[in-house]
Amino acid sequence: MKVSFNVLDRQYLKYKDEYLVKVAEILERGHYVLGNEVRLFEEEYAQYVGAQYCVGVASGLDALILSMRALDIKNGDEVIVQGNAYIASIMGITMNGATPVLVEPDNCYNIDVEKIEEKITEKTKAILVVHLYGQMANVLKIREICDRYELYMIEDCAQAHGSKRCEIRAGELADMACWSFYPSKNLGAFGDGGAVTLNNEEMSKAIKTLRNYGSDKRYHNKVVGYNSRLDELQAGLLRVKLSHLEELLDERKYIARCYLDGIENKYVELPCMIHQSNPVWHLFVVQVESSRRMQFIEYLEQNGIQSLIHYPVPPHLSEAYSYLGYKAGDFPITERLSQRVISLPIYIGMTETEIKYVIDTVNGYAGE
Ligand SMILES: *Cc1c(COP(=O)(O)O)cnc(C)c1O
Image (tube, rainbow, N blue to C red; front, side, top):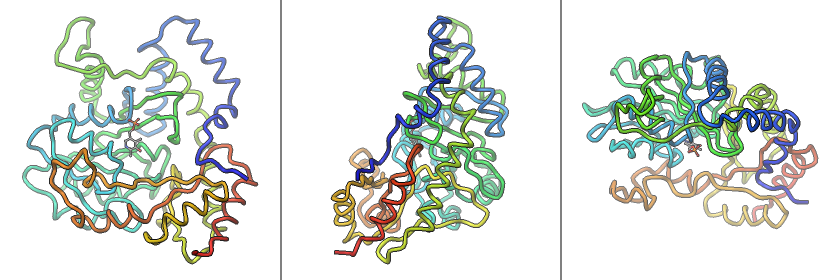
């Protein structure tokens, strides 16, 4: 039996008729950029997140770049972020000329809130919270730190659409929350897309201006901006998917529950569950001893199961960030995780047979 890491057409087939009707409607309307679909998606998504405003942009990375630009985060400023974030989170900071200040993660893969304050300096402007793999970081505590030190709280929610912790939704407490609609994300488009949600009207206008060459009135440019717009087709298709999001998230939660209940192997460490947390399982990430990981991956592969590593190279050791001057050993917890994590298949449309096969195969791993 073969189980791919992800099979994206199954989530399409689930609501195929609705998508096709929407595509035809948009194509026939003849308005393809910044029209009604984007406006309506922005309204509907803001409401879903519990924010007053939403601005659609071209990608999750652009959401990060534009939101930090709107907050005037620039050269000379520092932004605190977890060391094991996806590298795009760090790029949102450095594309604005600011410096990422890395903090080690906790046992649940998110920023260790106990280690944030020691990193705050005169130059710190913001804390960028990345809800990794779909489980939320301790936003209550981070909001409290941000308020106490007068820092912006930015959330990278690219992996956390619909995630909750203590009944607080991802993005709800942030000054700016950044979203990606890359196809494999929990709310994925059929191409690239992203958004910023927020509660500040002036800032939402600033991001709207930035996404459209720095102009709020055609051919009148206030600042040097970007071309970073969510297009009508993606927005329209996202509206269809958003109307089914809870059911899609429930499907991921069901698969994760099967894994958590069914996987039992002394070589495989399951992801931690936080009290009062309701993660959305963008990824199901287990750990095995670093000396065994390659062999475990090959074992899965020989049995037809595809797995991935999120992420094999921590940002501070990537070639792209060699200029920051870090070396191996600087962030031991982050580095240890990068050598131990493995993501198992979890996707919309996964069958009972496939779920059971993954569980049985993982349980059958004999460590040799
Ligand atoms: C996917 C992702 C991004 C980047 O989003 P794109 O839409 O691919 O640009 C940023 N941060 C995190 C945590 C992500 O998972």
